[in-house]
Figure 1 (spheres, helix red, strand yellow):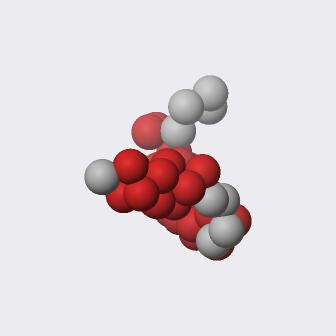
Figure 2: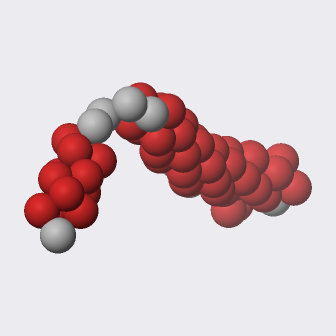
Length: 65
């Protein structure tokens, strides 16, 4: 029984291979942030271009004119 506990403790202390998992998690988080940011930016650009299109079509709807 002591050898099993010793083996488990040794396994938990071993850090070999942890770098790959850490890099994978980091890459996944970066990808999520990129997708969320691109989505927010796309929505902002779409709103801006829709406002410009409305101003070109009808100048009474333009803000600040």
